[in-house]
Length: 394
Image (tube, rainbow, N blue to C red; front, side, top):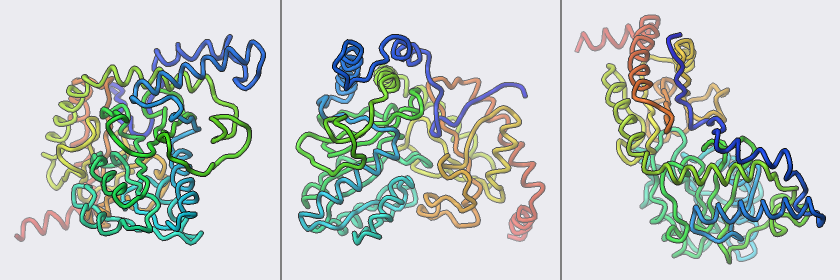
């Protein structure tokens, strides 16, 4: 192994030194329960309130619109189920989402279908962009919620969330966006973006695993998902995870400071795309330009993605074939199938997700190691022989 390159930041990120240092006092001295009235409790409550205010400042929203959860999946579940159950009282029992959502959204919608809600799964084009005509036709006066992810976790395509929000609101529906992949990778100003709810997860931007957030705009009311004590203004029971909340606040502040550096990250992304798509019978998945700055997803014909990952791992390169949450599944990616990738080709995708820590030398190394890995696997594939023969006969 010549070197180590981590290119799976969409799955998770390491806790940064700044975040770790910010969290340490919460383990050493400020360890009280913020619901307690004594000195230690008041110390913790002050730290909690300060973190909430700092996060609100990052997003240009109100502190009382910030709710802490355990992860992005919990936030997604709360937003969708909470909105559906509350809007049902108004006679709205229809949900509109897309075919390329994260499973935390798709499975939540499927659970609501078992309760009697109807769900429309809107299609996307070959680049993964939501079919706006289909979405407009789906939203009506029975629609409770429109749920569309800000940016896709597998192919990186960024969706027109502002326009979709206008469509939802024109029909009297709520708008929720899963922004787990977008936060830290695109600027988000909630004083301008009029979504009703937005979810994020800390471990995607150098905070620890186990902390998430749901933004709920003032005046929007949804049912609770977790009942218990009076935490989170009686909306989400459970003692607040003060160290991780502080870590999330710091991570979000650092991410906002680093937004200008995304131009450099996008340039490395483009170099990867250019180099990898020079490999014969390869194809970029997702929109060429309107994509996350660190996302590269390329499909290679006659390749099994899992074998490619293992060989790259032996070379010190950490990558993935898609969502880490479904990495144990043998089924092809639902996202790739939705954008029209044939079933037999959907297994051969490689997702590389780079970050601010990635260097040009890392890109050089990836571009050096991927082509021989692809060639090695194709040499062992009878399918590749058929492709070559077919090409010769043409």
